[in-house]
Structure formats: C-alpha cells, structure tokens
Amino acid sequence: MSDTINEAVTALNEKLAGEEIGGTAKFDIEGEGAIMMDDNGARAGDEEADVTMTADADTFRQILDGEMNPTAAFMSGKLSIDGDMGLAMKLAGVLG
Image (cartoon, rainbow, N blue to C red; front, top):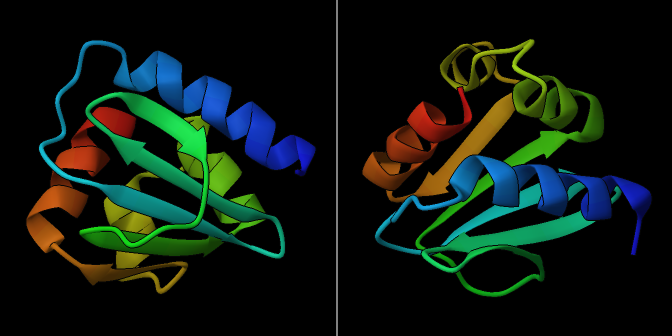
C-alpha cells in the first residue's frame, strides 16, 4: 500500500472523528489506490460504495490539506463524483 494512502487514511480519520456520514464513500486516488469511508472512519480498501470520488494524488492532497475546496475541484473537473451527490456534498463539508 502506498504512503499516500496510509497518510490519507490517518488524515481522514482525524477529520471524520465523531462524524456520521450516513453511508459509504470511496476516494479513488489515481495510481495510488482507494480509501473507504463510513460511520466507522476511513480505511484502505476498494469496495462498492454509495458514492465514489476520483482524483489524482495532487488534487486529493490539496483537498486534504485544505488548499483546494472539494466543490471547486469538482467544478473544475479535477474531482469526479459517481453516485450519491448528497453524500458527496456532506463529505465536502467535513473535508473542506
């Protein structure tokens, strides 16, 4: 598993602490792997999810670091979303 995935799982668990997202979400980081998120937090994995968000590693890192707003990333085409848009917007609020 890549360092990017390990670092992202740690960062996401800090951001998601105590949050109930009400579904399953997957961050697919191109060339690195995938991260699953649910009410239990984040973990490395590539399973079916209610929403899948796909971005390259640089975009994902900028979103995690707060340098890029997830909504702006989506609107500019740097982040693609497939599935439950409501859940994606909820996650954007947690991550942003």
